[in-house]
Length: 354
Image (cartoon, rainbow, N blue to C red):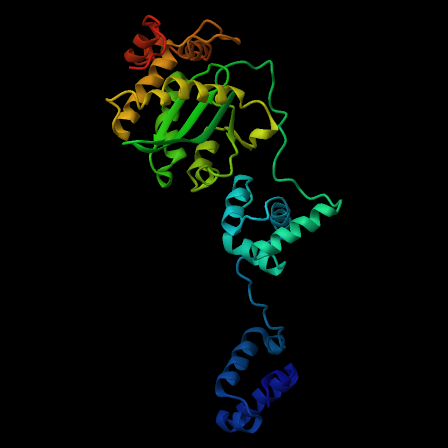
């Protein structure tokens, strides 16, 4: 007889029968239960009384990687827009939007909706395009945070990654660029292997140092959302701690949704013309290390000697614009490094390639 067939009253009678006869083995054999079951009943009765002998509904197994309905809608909305992308790409894109769901959870959603294969997702996207149903869009429109009256360094900063090309004897060059839209201050970090790109380590080591040195803050940091390089902006957790520690409003925005990227695009065109196009005619630049060292000195020259031609800081160098802001924030010039003051006060020479 199955033990589930006994109700609480019957279990109690079986316990009493065994205790009165002082023979648990015979009682178990008589009622077709194991000694383990008997002792479990006994312990339950001693602890909870007759209520402990009630039959309980079996617990439903916990489903690993269970995804909420809201996140499932986000996943399906993404599939509708980019049906060729698989779970890993979807993972990176959703993570950039602050949606935390693992690759396995994403795959389970795709499988449950018969979308685990690319062909199925493409068909789904076509069908969705025919309907008028509106889903949540993953690409945010230009936010309303931009205040044209706020024109000071640190208010709006842009960052992006670009593949600059493959150069003979040097190899591939990937460039991370950080550009302040008001002061035109820029920082560049080069990588020769895609897998070595670590944005937030450089941000922490180099850019945080500059913020502390000039007593500046970054109010709004916009990452240009390019699909190829998005994973390098969201991998790991370091970026979360940096953004939170420095109270930065960090946003991912697609380049086709706004013109706030015009400045950094023009700066990149300047780099191509004045730096990258001259690499191959400079025999001294015959290795990635030498190119990396040269770009560092080139950027130093740019920030401290190149004159801004328009905007609120017209006639100043990026360094002078940043220094003015530092003074407004109460920075004591005596606390700045001597090398920094020397560069700011040096004669302007303009950026020239060696």
